[in-house]
Image 1 (cartoon, helix red, strand yellow):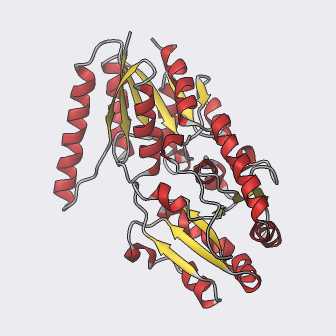
Image 2 (cartoon, one colour; image 1 turned 90 degrees about the horizontal axis):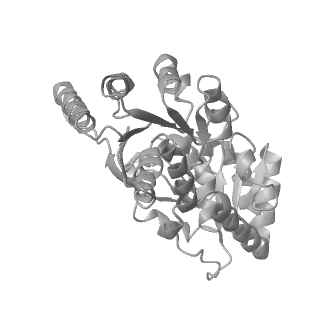
Image 3 (cartoon, rainbow, N blue to C red; image 1 turned 90 degrees about the vertical axis):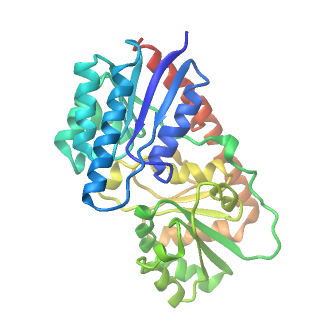
Length: 351
């Protein structure tokens, strides 16, 4: 029996969580016993009136879809149904208490730190809560016993084999991520500056969707001022997997603060899926994903960043070995194909 599932996201394809934990997950659920229909949220352009009318129209269309669905259909909300959490919660209340649907809430960031009342009630009243990391699991468990950890996972079919053979000795350090995580590169200005005096390096950054969007990030000016070769590359969903082939070492700096504590580490998983050795801050989910010196490196201060990046820069064989182990880790624990099957089994228990 094929079960109907409506999957809603708070953003569109440009939003990492909506794309990876929403759109891609729905594709694999459709191969595991569900008829998954995705409702990505694309915001409207224009004045306040146009945006408001768009939000209302979008809300009513989604309400209608759920209202006229079969009684056994499931409602799966990844973060929210639109950009406004209060409207998303109203949709949740209609779905669960008016239309009597089983509702699953998926969360992959510490959203409750910003909107405690709304997010905590999403968590409290959902039939199941799916989380992306261990710290989120511990938090959600306090409000809802029906919580399951399904890590943000990589669709391995989308990754090209990493190109370990390239002309020249220049080593390419890479940062791939959303613009919201790009300011963390400020943590690496001194370590990379020191390394650039010893080695022939290039820093590749793939985060903003245009060159103009890189202008507010002052850290890149600091890198260049101190002699670091920097290449800013616009990000787009089709080119990302190709661009990963041209990176030798993946960077994942992160602050050790409350918001970062609940982040789920997909940046690291993304590198590892491409066979790229990751070097990351020893915080949050990174500690669960990376075995230091086996499938990547963890760093706690500038000295460790210099030391561990230096090892990888100097030793091509080590880069390859760590990259192979990293890819194997993703195949075993962070494959979207495997974890979608796990998720499908969890959801099947609601029917």
